[in-house]
Image (cartoon, rainbow, N blue to C red):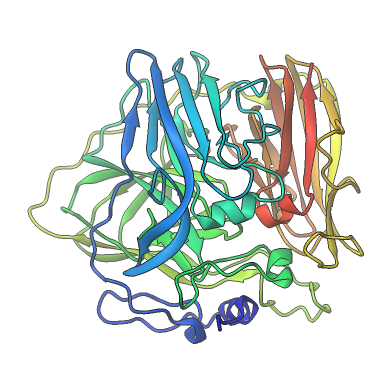
Length: 489
Ligand code: C2O
Ligand code: CU
């Protein structure tokens, strides 16, 4: 009988990080749920890459169940084109991306190109499309000529099934290349996700409590691998594109002993790279990172992040609670050895985006993200997840905006846990977060709204009309209704 995911979650939440297995071992998030020992020391695999040519990339994505090797075990998971993650799509600003999505799943699905500034209408980035099992759908995404470079990703977006399908393995990276290359010895795409497998290699169905908290998998994967090995030489500068594809897990990433510089987050880019010691990525966020290699052995680690807050979810003890605090996880092991290479040249100063703090705001809105008792969830739970008191209804337009305008939204969170808020299509800039002014004005698409706190963002509703959505990117919350419909006219 598979172990209860709830008890595993609780153990992980208590910070029982487990023990290292062998020299380059794995830290289990739960000692009671130790699966077979994974193959240690496997080199990091890069997902296959598809690159646009002459302004176009056309491909087919097959979403299907199948067996796939994860950490030395055979897992029954979901994948795009048989890989976890699916292929990396490399595009340039101004390109056209055509995707024929085939649904080989047992449930409806669709596709969202997370963070891309493309039209939400018709067969564009339209979250209202349903592709039923056995059918195909042709998506067409036209990137504007001034599309910001950066790391993006794709994943299914069929309301009610998003968390299950992403947790199952359906995601992949999209890179929009820099107009002026930034020199690096090599570039790696690191898609981080989490998954839970039972003794038969199946993904157990989610328990109601876990769904309420937002599920976190027992295994944290990098490109579908458990603790892969990366090797480099001292002095080498690598470019890492990190995607947090976890359904609910916040990643506080550390790489002690190495030199990390953050180029940007989401589609935002700092003028000059910022030296960082750790990076917090909410579900859905991406980091664009430069790592300059220092000789030795280093561990890419996810440190605990408590997305709950004192005051108490379950009775107000003020103690860190189980369920919202992700355990520590070893994600990858880096060995830096060999002949040193000379330092890479400075990164050219990046063009500053338009700063929305100086824009005329045509509307100010307040959006309150709340968890309440007494909702009737399909799953039989007892919490409701709402925005301004309402659960998602695809037939209702919650916010109508004027195309070409700039708006300011205050995102309030009355609940005892963080919600990472994502808006499709139109990029945001953070003006204020939890009382503090924001730093640089950079384009963001997932903004954390801390437990019992708030964030203020400005949004540029440039150049697209049509309907889309905003929602919590803890996808269990989104599936339970924490999503709204926006229409630009
Ligand atoms: Cu990455 Cu609406 O989602
Ligand atoms: Cu949430």
